[in-house]
Length: 328
Image (cartoon, rainbow, N blue to C red):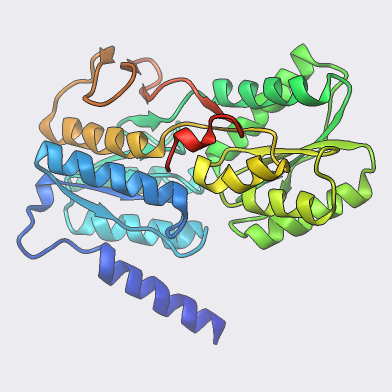
């Protein structure tokens, strides 16, 4: 019964958001396939994508799985390729499965690229990155150490175990701790998939098993609420610092309760805008310049031809003091 319900929801998602309008030109369409629909982070990317599509005169499709299932995500991508959509961007759930799909896209003249989460060895046309993986990994550790000290024990609660972006950030967290804070103890990452309740249980178990725990990092927007709720429920506000890569709207209540000390992220609406802009560039066959100032962006985006990365900018740190300045 549960599997049938999931399939029904998945089919409904495809019908509602994965098909082109009858009047649309597939070749002038940019699609974005998130890791998961129905969460604030990707909703903001969708809104940014819609704005870019209106500004640039292209059609926009937003379609993704109802849970973090790489198989379902690939089915949506293949459906878009079969429709001949001009450019398809993907926030990759499983980097190991994307390369054959990139080849299928090339054979049909579809520009397949990544955004938010990369598959660097897949042959993708470009990666639209929110910030460098190194910058994100380093920033969240540096901010944590400022609050808990260099000899603390810190836990990591991630999302899907196969998500390349989450794993890259964790890798740079570990690198930063080893190189700059050798006395900091980072526990082995735990994985909650896309479920906040699972993240809450993992965080609760980690606090119980590690009485000296001083910090918990949620490495996905879906795990942030679970980490914050677990710290509040355990009565650990002030003694355990929570954080994560989550939007101000997701983190706001936890920042204000004190269960979160800070949150690290970027503006996903601008990432969505940049994604559609990149798709339009690919459709038009225009090369990416080293630096471009897009309308409404605080700073120029940059492109590195050696890595094929189009970079939005530096990560931002949100706290109880500045969170109300943002709405996404």
